[in-house]
Length: 426
Image (cartoon, rainbow, N blue to C red; front, side):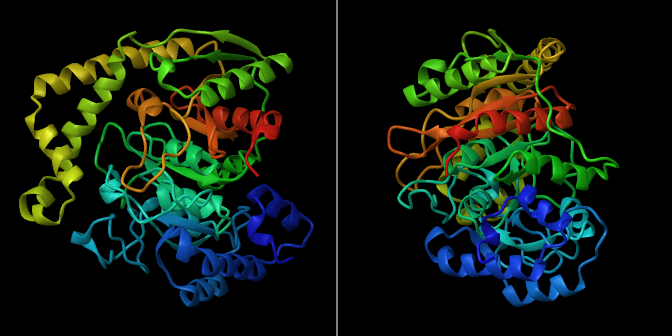
C-alpha cells in the first residue's frame, strides 16, 4: 500500500475500522513523498523525519480517529519541539516552550505534528517560498501557502492554517483542495501569532470535505460521529464583485447552483452587502489598523527586517484614525446581524472563492477579494474544488455559514462535495 499518502482521512478511517490501518506505513509514505517533492514545492519551513518517527512510537491511542495521522503546522503556531518563525527573519529559529492550544489538542488526539509549513510574513501579504504544486510557476496563494500545498501534493492528509483576509479559502482554491475557515472565536488561538483580534480564525486543509467532520469531532470531543447532511435551502450570493470573477469561476458557481437544484435543494438568488463594496473596504481598514498595532514592536525595533509590503501595510494602518476604524467596525456589526437574519432560513451561502485561477509568478499571493467580506463578518466558510479554469489550474466555490454553526456547515459541505465530486480536481 505505497499510496497511503494519497488517501483522505475518511479513507484512512475506513482502513482503521477494518483493522488495516498502519500508522508506520502511512508516515513512511508521507515522508517519502515529502523527500521526493518538497525540493520543488517548498511547502515546509522545518521538518525532522527522525523526530517524527520517535513521536509515532510514543503517541497515545484515544479512539479519536486521528491516532497516527501526520498533520502540517502553519509556522505561526508554537510547538515545543520545533522552531516557530512566523514567516519573518526576525524570529528565525525561535523556540517556544509550549504548544499552541490547537496543536496540543491534536496531539492529545494521537495526531502527529509532522513539521512547520511555510507562511507568508506574519500571515500577511509578502509571499514565502512555496510553489503551487499544480503548476510550480504559479503562486499557491497565501497566507497558509505551505499547508495548502502539502495537502494538495499528497505530502500530508491534513494541515492547519489561519485566515485574516483569505488565507485559507484562497490557497485551498488555488491548489485544488478543501479548505475550512472557522467562525470567529470557534477555536482557541493561544500560542498562535495573530495580527487581528477581529479577523483571525483557525482552519484546516484536507482533500475530502467529509474529513472536516472527523477533525472537528476530534477537537470538540464529540461523543457521536456526525453524518453529512443535505441542505434544504441555499442562497446564491454573487456579491458586489461578481464582475471581477473570471468566466470560469462564474460558470463554476452557477453550475454548482444547478447541480444542487437538481438534487431538490431550493436555490434562491439573494443580494447581500452594500452595492458599493463597503464591507470589503471596511475589512481593509480593520485589518490595516489592527495589524499596525499588533506588529508595533517589530516596526519600531526591527523595521529593516520587514518586507516593503509589510512596512507599507503597517504604515497605512498607523495613518488611519480611530474614527475610521470605529466606522468600519460599526458597519461590520450592522451587517453581521443581517447575515444572521439571512441564514436563519438558509443553510449556507454559495459564492465564489477567488477571482480566478492562481496567478503566474511568486511575487504576489493573489487577490483576497471574495473572502474579505465574509471574514469581516466572522462567518465560517469552506472552499470546495470546482474544476479548472482557462489555464487548467484549479478553481473553487465558497460555502459560507452562520456564525457559530460550523458543524452544520461542514456537514452540508460534505454532502455537497459528494454531489459536486465530478468537478473536483484529480
